[in-house]
Length: 129
Figure 1 (cartoon, helix red, strand yellow):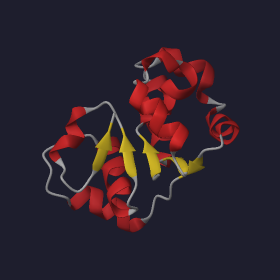
Figure 2 (cartoon, one colour):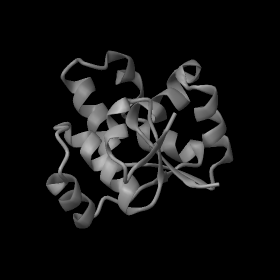
Figure 3 (cartoon, one colour):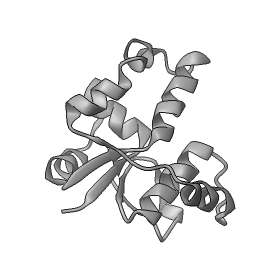
Figure 4 (cartoon, one colour):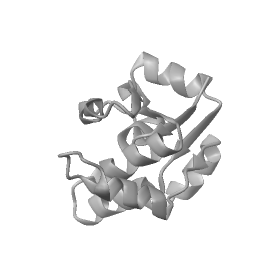
């Protein structure tokens, strides 16, 4: 199989709302050699909890590192190369979280598990749902 990088929503749904994962997404997670989450996903969740845009995640926010460990997941690296690639890539999408997640998947040759169709604009990113 492959190493998976879970988009933020895919990771959250894997522990807080499994019914929202597609059957293919579940199979991808179960069959993966490794499942990773970007550190930027922790920041994204925290930001959205803080500003009131993701209240359902508030009870989980402080436990996120432990949840990833309990799931057997791995933290993906966030390197200067990934950050530069995300900031300099020619892509009209402005969301910094998505830009960093896409660059992580591309530069580390991971399959990105995401329901978000925005990643389809990037031929270099192997996105699945």
